[in-house]
Length: 137
Image (cartoon, rainbow, N blue to C red; front, top):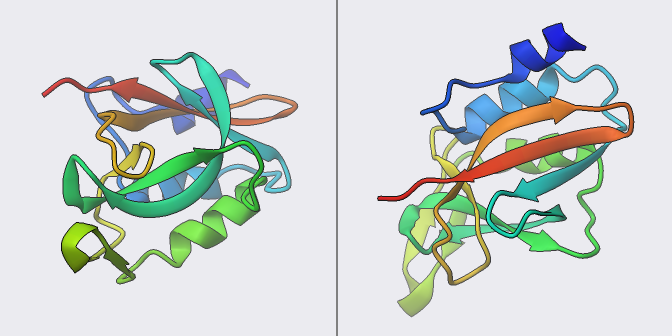
């Protein structure tokens, strides 16, 4: 278990791009495991919701929380992330932003700037937890 956590951990100052998150999730052996996101500010876990352009930096990607979600397993999350490359997201005033796997990814509700970035993935017997940490700018 310690080796898995070490392999999935990112250094303290780093955060995930879509590509890095995909790379780490693909290392999980049992992709049928449930996946949740830990919100560092509210200290709650949430299911991944839908992707959108991030309010704090429109050209970055964000995912919101969901009480019920179609994204419930690691495999579901991987499929959604793989479809991000070059996908166009519309934002306020009909602006369009094209995302790629190089974009940073935030955990934030639509229309807000939480500054929560994905920083760590932990694997437990019951499932996978993606942890967030608030970055102040």
